[in-house]
Length: 80
Image 1 (cartoon, rainbow, N blue to C red):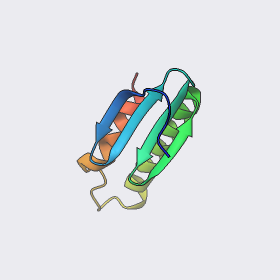
Image 2: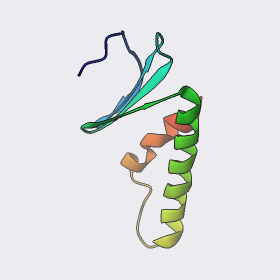
Image 3: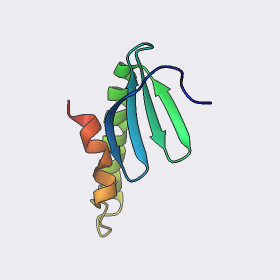
């Protein structure tokens, strides 16, 4: 079901989309067909957790290149 208020685009790349509803003060994070609806403070927490998970993957699989551009999609979420 589409959202009833206008959404401001915050970031978009390769199937990932982050938009803000100023009326509801909710951030919409689209990951493919799934949409997470979060408070702005929760977005910061999610970005930090994803960043730590990505870093952990680099340590678990040091021979595997986990620094692909698609893994860097969360970087805009980590910086304001």
